[in-house]
Amino acid sequence: MNPDAGAVTAQALAEVLAGQGSTAVSVTELRRLTGGASRQIFSFDAVRGDGTRSAYVLRRDPSGHGDAPRMRAEAACLRAARAAGVPVPRVVSAADTAPGLDSPFLIMERLPGESIPRRILRDESLAAARARLAHDLGAIAARIHAVPVSEVPMLADDDPLDAISGIYRDFHEPRPVVEIALRWLAAHRPETHRKVLVHGDFRLGNLLVGTGGVEGVLDWELAHRGDPIEDLGWLCVRAWRFGGTAPVAGVGTREELLDGYEREAHWRPDLNDLHWWEVFGTLRWLVLGRFQAQRHLRGDERSAEFAAIGRRVCESEWDLLRILGMIGHGDALPPEPRPEPHHRGDLHGLPDVPGLLDAAIAELGDGIAPAVDDPGAAYRLKICVNLLRIAQRELVVGSAQRAAHAGRLTRIGCRDEAELALRIRTGQLDPADPNVRSAVAGAVAERLRVTNPRHLVSRE
Image 1 (cartoon, helix red, strand yellow):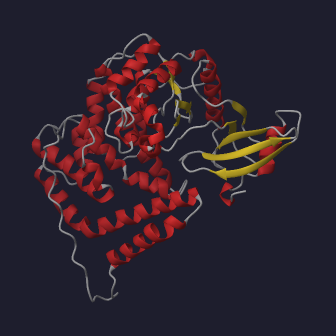
Image 2 (cartoon, helix red, strand yellow):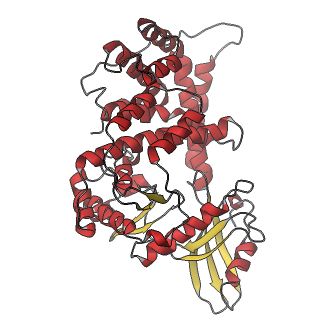
Image 3 (spheres, one colour):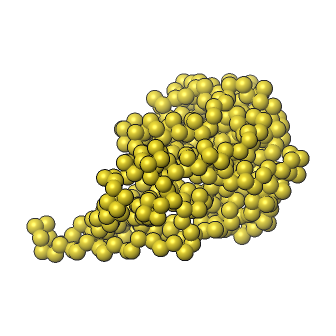
């Protein structure tokens, strides 16, 4: 057993599976998989006494962070979606707890296919599947939305804009871009369609893709009742293109997506409605990213991944400014800040701090990482290397950026970004004012230059 399997044991899983049949079960190849920011995911094989071998996946809440109603809802969604012809894994077992698992869980069959987005976008063997993926995803989304909501009565039916606004306000951290987006969304809200089962996280990373197309739709923990176009707009959010240039999952056009949806659902969503939900989805990912960072900042669940997600919120800020038309391809970015001078010969000697970080990044990223066999450890190491790069860039240019940022705020009479955000909220400042726009976009661009400079390059 992989030691990264943590507290989950083969014996515990064998006992759960034995309760589903009349023969004894032995569990082998138990290992924890990467991904799953809020759930633990394990892969394992089970062999019954008659020699029958089956491949399974365990989804489990972290110990002490269980949410039994949500896990029950996820199992119900999988069963209802499967009955409606959606490609999803069969649920084998689900319960609030079991000896040796000690938290809500579900066990499902392991389907074939690739789930890593960058492989889906680049693997030559998946070229044919990629060519029709946007169309196929539209058709699958329509099948999800055809599931009778009576099969999943426990799902929430909250107003999405109110819900995301409430989460954001609870941070007590006003952000100018969020205020601009909330005002736009409230002013341009489309008519609501009939409430359907919404997957809630329909995107690359939660799909299994094989040479024949989509093999499975995974991770239903955010499912709810809502507007069907929500899933389509979420699929168009830039964060889920993973470096691809096409607007739908990095592989296709919005028209192809809607063609596939219309073929299955017999009605065609409006492009303006799709745009609204793409704006909403981008804002939603911004707020959910900040929410995940909050779990780390409060000490509820210390995680390098959550820390990295917190810094990457600025990517969604930039994307919102782009799709709301507040910045264009030809807009000038703030000038590149001058690097801080190296303090040669000071008290602490050489290498200086940027030099030490550079040595650590090179050793971890180029020396140690390629030699790590455990995928989980390699994934965490990659996150840590990226955090070091962010810290290094901020150390080198952060002082110059802060000075430039203060100058932009002074020109519009604001002390900080929180005051700027609140004055946008109350209508005291107009985002269309060139100086306001410069202050908002300039701050986001400076953050991106530290966190992920490549994101400043347009992908559409």
